[in-house]
Image (cartoon, rainbow, N blue to C red):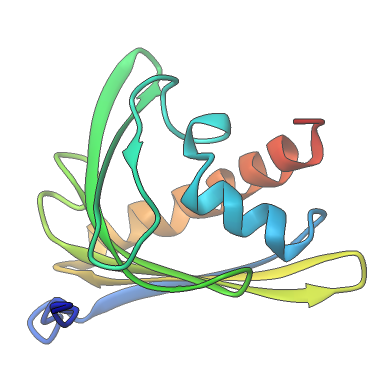
Amino acid sequence: MVEPVRVPDLSSRPYGLEVQRAMAAPPPVLYRAWTERFDHWFAAPGSVLMRPAVNEPFFFETDYQGMRSPHYGRFLHLVPDQVVELTWVTGAGGTEGTETVLTVEFTPKDSGTRLRLAHAGFADEPTRDRHSQAWPLVLEQLDQRTAEPA
């Protein structure tokens, strides 16, 4: 029997953000980057434990300015080449240990993709604001790395 997906209750954490970006890569490449190739564009090489399946947990670390930061979560919803939804938990300077929900949508546009990222469930404005500043940079990095030959 398949267990139903338990979505976090975000009602006490009302802060969220949305970022949109035109990406050069087509949706299948970006979907794969978010589900199978995290260590090619975001996570520290060798740190990813991830199997793209609903209710499956994942773990990876980032390495930014010599600081390694663990990231945890689980997949909530997957529509190949269209949607990746997952929980996202990081420590100090990130989500502050709060389970947030990250939804990434891929819409074909010309030869690339219109990417929409929504990140919900922040406990306060400063945490949301830090992520509002970080996500555009992260998506720029994704765009650059997916444009490179694999």
